[in-house]
Image (cartoon, rainbow, N blue to C red):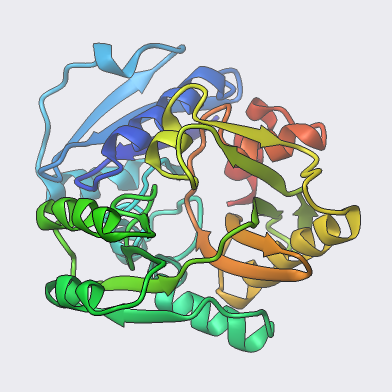
Length: 331
């Protein structure tokens, strides 16, 4: 049997989201087919390992952590590392580099593609140029310049970190109160050097997200786009993504015509290939009339049973256990 290690946690702002992803994988992975272990990386980048024989609560696990160097060496014991990490350290190419340097096989994109996709400015520039999509006007600035630029810019605008996920510190700015509230959060934000994106605010749009699945022979399984309708905010923010009832998610995405839905599914695959992604990815879009605006590509999107890609896979007849098996067998 294949020895599979689920790796989760890490020091990023998406630590808890990563734990949720790992918990769902533990609940649905095929224990008859794989020898399963779990590695939790704490916020100090220490590793703790546990053999898992059946579904259990991650919160019940209490193991003494070991150092980063010792943890990386121990990863070599497994046939495959199933990455359930998100954000900095887990999705930005850092853990991928460690794994590549130690010849450890893992799920998801390689270190180069992970770094590229985490950098929204670079990846959007490439996608808009080569796929000739309409562009969201964007400035990349340093965090220290944010206040002065916002105070002297015409609203409305949208601001978000260039290299962070889960809509952390993402804000639509329509008036001075919005600016004040956003700056309060950015005062506590620990920029990792990626800078801040200041963008034009697209309004009256339909938001959709669409994944794709890549087989190890290089062919693709197309997935249908999912339409996202936030219920507690004006856009798909952190609470909309993770709170119960935070958003309505519709498959098929009836807010756009079928021809456009098919176009988005094809775009998700083309973007995946252009950015050098591997195994699976999920791209996010805003659609206004005939215009499709590309936002970003996630190389390790959330993977709970109710996350977007599992919902899209379910719509084509692939349940969550089969999806996890797909990742393991096609890595």
